[in-house]
Amino acid sequence: MYGNPRKIISDNGTTFKNAKIVEFAKKHKIEWRYSSIYNPRANGLAEAFNKVLIKILCKTVGVNHRNWHEKLPEAPWAYRITYRTPTQATPYSLVYGTEAVLPIEVELPSLRVAMASEIPLTKQMQLRLQELDGMDERRLAAQQNLELYQARMTRAYEKLSRVRAFRKGELVLVLRRPITGRHHGPKFAPNWEGPYIIDQVYDGGAYLLADQEGNHPISPINGRYLKKYYGQNYPGNPYKRQNREKESLTDDWAESCVGIEQLFE
Image (cartoon, rainbow, N blue to C red; front, side, top):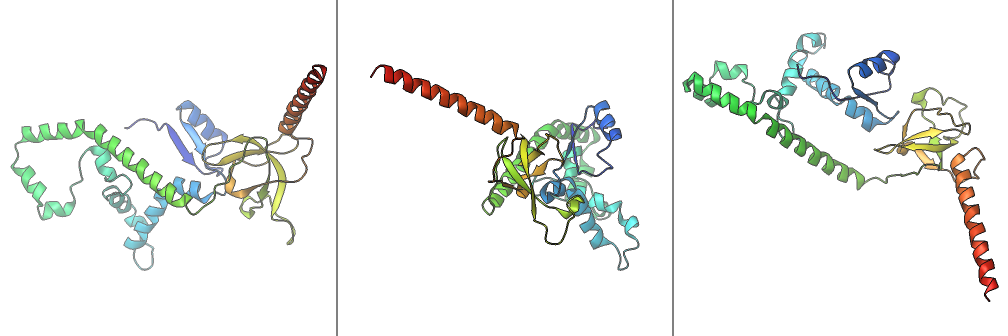
């Protein structure tokens, strides 16, 4: 009804990360993005609605929680007609251009229902068309309110945290994370493994790592689970070789300049 989405964000589960999903996204021209592994912020963003849905069901189901499937259609309806602080509007109004009429407003007529019953049909149609014409402006205002709200939350978080930033070619260590299933070891094994090379830097603090052979052993990971490696550089780092070649060329150029100065002394 509203067309295909332009972007979809999901976790790294096999349900979403497989050849059929890639083919489906390519067919419908959808940009499918995956959250960085073991990053609660990104995963929470992808599953925010599920968290709200569970909270609503916990308040409406019975004591034994066996009738949750009967209350499931009511939970999304409650979410859609509830005022959201980030957008300063209800999801229902952003889709249909007007607020929903609750059943209780029909049983006990509210002010707007009573006024609407007295307005002629032609006038109601004109008012409805005006509401539909103003939907784009309302959605734009909701988008601006959402961006301002996210900016305030980001500033509040950054005051209490220290952001780690790495550049392409740097050597880093990776925190062992039991959730990935590939970091099992003895009890007294080190908490960090590596070093790895920063092969690519993404927006939002995610990094793609490469090993000494140039392979990518893990998916893009958030910088919260990385720290700088200060040991000796192993020869498999192509970025360090490029830096050494540039340094040698700079040293040769400096020596030639010194030799020219000695000729004119």
